[in-house]
Image 1 (spheres, rainbow over the protein chains, first blue to last red):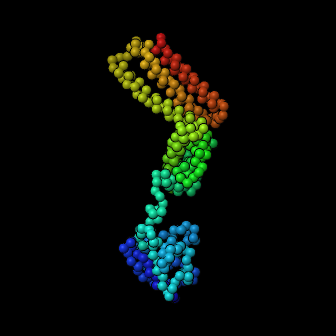
Image 2 (image 1 turned 60 degrees about the horizontal axis):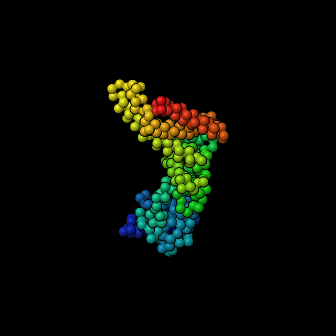
Length: 215
Length: 109
């Protein structure tokens, strides 16, 4: 069976390329090569991937000197003379091997962004909605998931619908229905805290009201 | 509208807190050697300070309780709309009236 001589970056910025011999297969992607190394040659190899189909962007690496998605790069297109060089992305701090620190470099960290990030991982499973006493007692209540989502958008500086949103969450059935029982926080499988988000909305709507912005 | 009620609810609680603490303090002080109606009335009768003090408490308590009862009525009985508003105002005004009558009784009499 044909083999590829794969040079993989190991270590941090002061690391070096190490050689692995990986079987070449049909329809094999560069990500498949990296995965083969980790599963068969060196379980300590660090790299990132998630979707494997060019949706998430997690698997970007430097392949033969070019930055690209490894999941969308077939070895048949990039292997030259049986050789392949795979390194971490350039211009970013290397965490280990093929994994770089993207967060620190390309996402600006502000207080508003951190507040938005704290609630952003909600995937609308409705566990908080089912756990909420206020939802049970008040059919008009928007509920913790929607209000948590609103709070992430209130903290998104790019959003242009702030006034309408504050008006919506301050209306009947909005954030003021919450009694802060914290069942949503207690039961959230993602360890989010919608109660804190709703408390933020109460503060923000109160400030807007005192400034006369909610009339 | 909800923000206004929320503010009034929190604001009235903030007003009541120091008043309650001073009220409790005076109870400890006044009952250090027995308590008589004459002692109490001696302090309150004709006193602008205690009149204002308890009148402020009555207004804050009536506001706070009326808004709280409005929420409980809405959640437990499903009351909505005009009936809810009338209920809140009636309850609040009743509490305020009863309280102010009581204040008047110890200050003016």
